[in-house]
Image (spheres, rainbow, N blue to C red):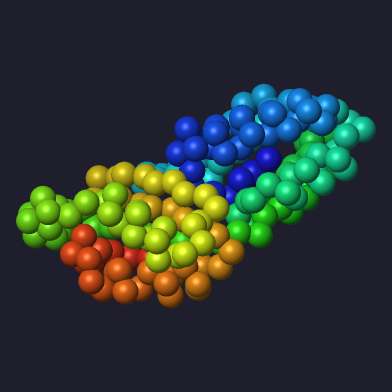
Length: 179
């Protein structure tokens, strides 16, 4: 299963692999047999994969169960045939993602000394009123990316705009819709 989300490996494991394994065990549809995170060449997480071994006669039930699990648009379940070739693909996900990229090198030293990235995360959650369904992050050499997934990118961006213009650590940040 391709999960179109930028999740740290530990978040992928807890959000999907462990959660799905519990559901699969209860429903007797198969097993989670691993997963991995896919990275961009320049660094940062691009997406995730969760490997599922599903019983042949339980594919429809598996799809029903997966539609109850929040996932980003662009996620999909790929079913392989006996030769390991793609047999069928099923689209999954309704969430939209927002990436908030905080500049880690070009701000005055006192900003990094006096500001706290945890404040930014807490304030985004507060401003959104309804917390995002999923959250992860990635720290690179020049910026730290915060990833939020909820019902609407536009709504998330509109609600945090004031933070971006007033909190010093958000200077020179960039925001993008995750697709």
